[in-house]
Length: 88
Image (cartoon, rainbow, N blue to C red; front, side):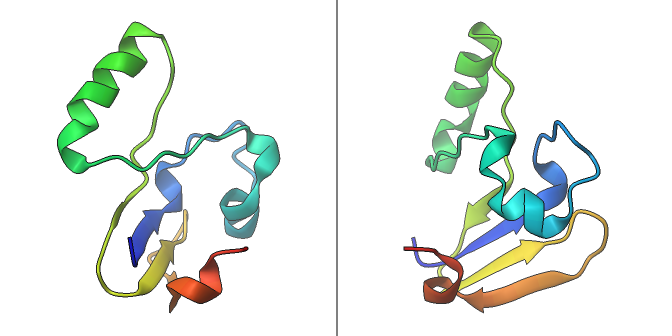
């Protein structure tokens, strides 16, 4: 993948007072992120329902070499090259 669009308003939150930056980097939220083919989304929904596990489809992959992270409260976004948004 060489780009993505992420929508923070779709992230399952335990604390609705978190800022966008806190959501984006919050390890303590105990979120697990997986990347799946969009054709497998129905299978993932089925598995999550069967296992009584919440899930959220928070974005999608693009070929723009940009990662756009959309704010939870506005239509503003952070737009950066993929290499600058990913921590190594």
